[in-house]
Image (cartoon, rainbow, N blue to C red; front, side, top):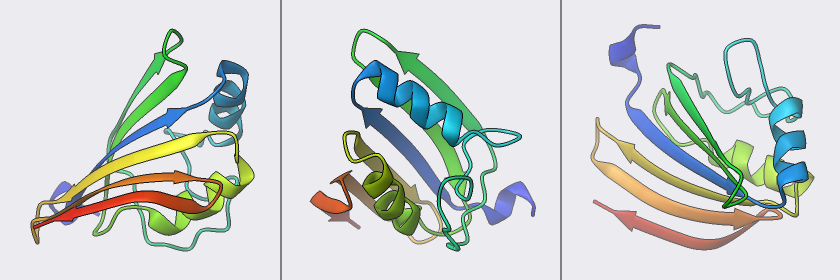
Length: 118
């Protein structure tokens, strides 16, 4: 896939106790960054093109920025948040191809907030 085929920019913040964040990172790290399939059977077509990672121990937070092909990794977020029920996942995404954007807060498989803007 070429860079021009990735249209959805994602910003993911994960909050929780530092030990749980560390376990999440260890258990979900692939060859080149966070893996959508390592701890989940997610079949959603999400391909990571680039990634930035920031650990903030003072705020008990991990921050990822990555591109996916067309949509944000909603299916993966739902599945992984059930496995890491003590962590809170905040995702902001923007699809540059169709100008769709949104903001999710999800914990233990439940969406607490969903803001969609066009």
